[in-house]
Length: 62
Length: 171
Image (cartoon, rainbow over all chains, first blue to last red; front, side, top):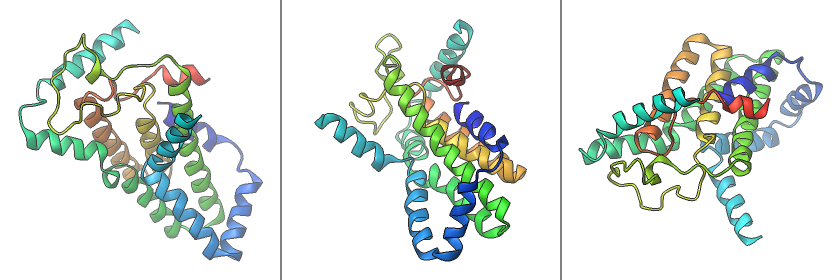
């Protein structure tokens, strides 16, 4: 329910300017944009499993 | 709250009646629950379909914001897990004495709090992004997120498919 609400709420806000800058980045330097987009979508696709493991490891070390 | 708890336990105990009966069924449900291909990968692939299908600026910006919102939802759920009192997973709750599924290790997810479910938050958030763009694919995404989240209820990793009190903890 939390996920649904956050997406709907943020979707109703006016579109922020920085998001258009990301599109400029995609147009001007698409190789680097898609490299970063690949990593981001890979993490989202794997439900941030690696990030969670790394965070858990760091928390264990601290 | 007591009503939802009773309702959740009824569903959990009903599903648990089918656990441990067939190794194939337990392993199939575990695959649905754990395989990234059936969870985030499928939903993220649909977002990429939208990205390349509609090159209008506004459509792409909305997709980027939706993706970021989904990630934020997953992150918030995780932070809530860490800040709220530890919720033991139903599988490890001695009082419920659930049947252990085939193929699930004795320590699996034992150190992770079960509430709120970051897995469900992220999957349902991605499904909402898809639904806001395309109702048919969105319905499929919600159906699929429900199936994979139900798999986790079946396995005893979480108690409920969708929680109404999660947003109350944030807003």
